[in-house]
Length: 352
Image 1 (tube, one colour):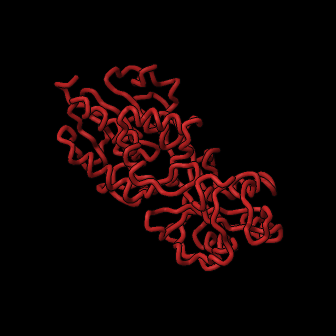
Image 2 (cartoon, helix red, strand yellow):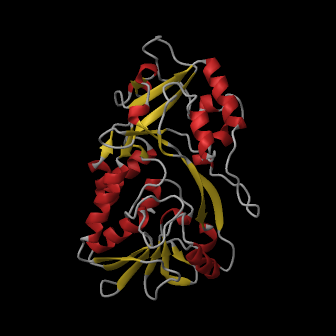
């Protein structure tokens, strides 16, 4: 294998990790990434391993499943974990990163590796020889059609949403308090407490707000683990209070009591100039996001650096089309990796 080149299609988390691991073992790698030649609805830069959704890699404690997987990846020499640990941010028991520094570092390390050649071009068919398809959920239309031909049938999809980011200077700090849930990690989150009346007003505005609709010929399938907050809200009046707005483990120091509901803000960058609204993935239209989310105490004058958005994610039916070693059935030299295999989560996709 070391005498052959390994072709990897896709420079996301799984593609860059696969390229790094192979190159570290003496394999020559050609890594294809279509950005900036062709971009996607969710990417904002041409960096490799860009985090397009949350900046959180979930739990970091080794006694959790996600934390144990991270530790195993560290022991395996994971580039993604090295970058995450290098650019981590305060986030309680979770591992959150400065997404710009994280992706910039990975891009620099991969591009300067003597055994990795990065080609910035859209791939529309699988190259001859050994290859890894790591195109992720935002696979280009041309390559998705080629892949569908290889699969002799339909691939699958769902709609995924992204949460908004607000300018730190636009937050009214007199109405919020800093704390981590159950005191884990110190004062890592900004918490926007709500009374019952404030929650009711916010809830009513949210479920009545105008939202982006799916195209007529597509079903509105959303991913349960990253559900738009307005979709979640329609499942019940108190659903949000047991989900992203749950107040348990948080005490408002001004009242000494647990609020009726809480919206949490998590820092986006090392300089603390921006915060994302935790769990507020949304497909509301942009003017509606400004109107509704400014009802949150402390965000009445919030300036949005990034609005929430929705995009289509593509993946394959892994049990139907993949062998146990993740090679594509009928194509012994072609392997699949990352989220396109049907796995979910940054770290899980990297490890796949």
